[in-house]
Structures are given as C-alpha cells and as structure tokens.
Length: 497
Image 1: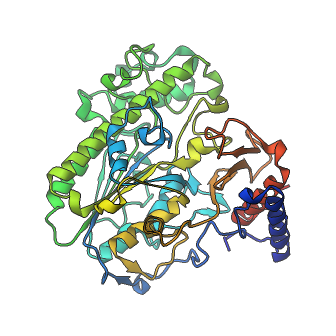
Image 2 (image 1 turned 180 degrees about the vertical axis):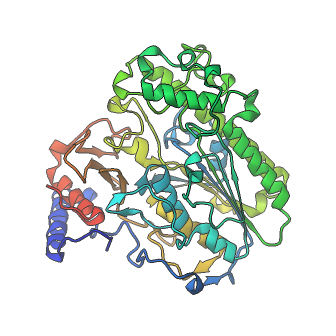
C-alpha cells in the first residue's frame, strides 16, 4: 500500500466492484483491469535497505555496457518512428530500427526531478502528490548497484536542476560532469547591459518573468560562437570523450547522459530552424519559461512548433554523432543503448503551451522509449504493452545480468521482448502537482485529484480511435469513469467526490 493511502478496505472493495461492473457493461473490449492497485509491483515496499544489507549477484553477468540517454521534454509523437512525417529525426529513427520501440511508455511522476527519481530508483514517487525533492543519501540507485557490480559509472548532465544545491543525483557515480548554463542556471551575472531580450522575443509575450529568464539565458550564451558551443553538443561531446577515456577499464561501464534539450528555450542553430521555416520574426527567436500563456496568440503557435521541431532535430543530430562515436570506438557490439525522455510538452493543445499540469494528457505524460541491444533478433520490434519509467532500472539490471535483493515497483520490460509475458500491468498512472491521469490500452482519463481547481479536466479519451486525444467522451461512458476513478483512489490515496 502506498504511503498516505488511508481508505478502508471496505471502501476499496466497493470501488473495485463498481469498476468491474462498469467494464462489463462497456463490453468485453473494455475489461482491462483485474484489480485496482496493480500499477506497482506488489512485492515492492519502498523501504530503504541499509547499505550493508544490499546484496549483488553478478554470476549471470552479460559483460555488456549500457548507455542511457535522457532528453528532456521530447514528445513521444515527435519522431519519425511514431509516424510523424514532418519531423526530421534520422538518427533516433535508425536507433529504433536496430532496437525495440515501446509505444506506450508513461511517466510515473512529473516534472523533471520527480521523473528522474523514478528512473534512478525503479520506484514510484506517487506517495500522495508527486514531489520535487532530492535523492536521499540512503536511496539505492542504478549507479549504486552497478558500482557494486564492478561497473565504471558516469553521469553527464546539462539538465541544471540536477546540480542545484543538495539535489544529490550524482551521489553514486564514479564521475560526474556538469555542463553549465542551460535555461535560468545562474551561471553568469553580467554585464547585463550586453544583452537585450527585446531583440529576441515579441513584445506581446515579454512579461517581467520572461524578460528576467531570457536575460539570464542570453548572458549564459553570449560567448557562444558555433554549434559545438550549444549545450546539447557540449553534453554529447563530453560523453564521447568519457567513452574514449574509459572504454578499456576493467569491467563494463554505465554512462547516464541527461540532456536538457529539447526543453525550452528553443534555441537551435539556424540551419536546423530553417528545416521548418524560411524566416522567423527574429534572427534568434527565443521562447522559454516565464511567458504568460494567456499572452500567446493563435498566430504564435505555428512558429513555436517550428522552434521546438528545430530543437528536436538538433538534439537528434548531436545524439547521432555520439552513436557514431560509439561505433568508431568498437563498442557497438557490446553496448546496450536506451533513449527516452522525462515527459513531453504542449504545443497549443487546448490552448496549452509548454507542459501544463491542468491538461495531463499524452502530450506530456507519454514518453518515447527505445532500447537497442546488440542481439539482432530484437531489432525492429515494437511493444504495445503499457510500460513506465519505474520499469527502466529493473529492466536494465536484468539485461546486464545483475541481480540484487532490492525490490522495485517497476518490472522487467525485457520479458515483453522474449515473450515471457504479454503485459506487465493493466494500467499506468501519472501524477503532476494536483493532477493525475490513468492510462489503459483503451482509455486515458485525467482530472484534478488533490484540489478543487478542475484545470481542463475531467477528460476521457478513447485512444484506440482518438490517437491525438482531441475528443472528450466522458459524457458517453460514466461507468468507465467510475472504474478509472477507483484506480485513482487506490493509487493516489484519495477519495474523489
């Protein structure tokens, strides 16, 4: 049972009965949950094992290396592999062609830091609300376990939230590299009169907050002279250098690269911007946090989508160069590569821009996931089963042949590839601030679970026919809503009115 979940067993049983009745009434195709509470592995207790009690078994070690690439705010549908014919992502698409693409992977908790806590521990962070807090010293992490298993571990990061005081995500790595200056990282403080946000942002969008944030970003990037100075390129270059320096160490390695792109500000090199639009209102049009969403006009959205698309394509380009380096170093045949994101972003859906908790739909809750294993029998496969961020760590450990007595909320996704299982769970849940959503193979339901402000919910989508989640069918399926709210009550530890 999750912390903060104080409903009586009687209340839960009633909710489950309501749910089973609702799916029976909706037809056999809707019978997608056997019981509430199965988004987590029932064995996991979310307890911290004392360091001396952690056991590691490497008797089945594969000798494989692993590279994990997390790209912040990458929408699941902004890849060619998902059918987007406009976006240019040849390198990630090629990785997917030689790997496994998981079509239905969802974040457990948003935004940046809550999502990373799940990835690094294999456990849900929805203990009540999804909280922004650091890793604890006693948290057992992916790097912690692999370090004890004889791996050399590296953390290469330009997602600046990680290196704010006391965030502690670097704690178990053998080495960590901070790439400074992304977004509002307090990297440089002057001279402030050397930059002018008015030269980069339309007047109708330039709120006081956006002016402050863009001033900081412009200071951080004022000495940039070429593409290699962009943060995405710096991170990938640092990763290449680390691989060259550490490939001959005794034992395998794990490199975890966490890059902030394609997160705002959307500031790709000009040649990538021109892939999507010949000209923009400014030579260097910047858009980032601090904008008042009510100030965004309808005519702004196409430009902002193109800025984001350019950022995605530039990120793909940099990752492609890193993959080429993996190959040239002779690591391609003994290295697993995983690519994913923490969440997506809104690009005008129902008037939302950037990520808005009040519309916790698949634009932000669903994430791309590719795992490329050297085993050619896995290449080109696609998995429709529901997966979650909390499955990352147990899956990677299993693929590397590393066993531990640490129990996880997540499960081994590789069982879906081998055919050992046809699914891991009947549903997944996502939490972001006061809002939550439930995802099944057929339905996606979102609403406020913690307060009175409804946001843009409640909303229900039939994702089997409405892939872009444009038609709210909540009025047509009250029984389905009853069942999905029973799941929310169980998973979030609330009683919904």
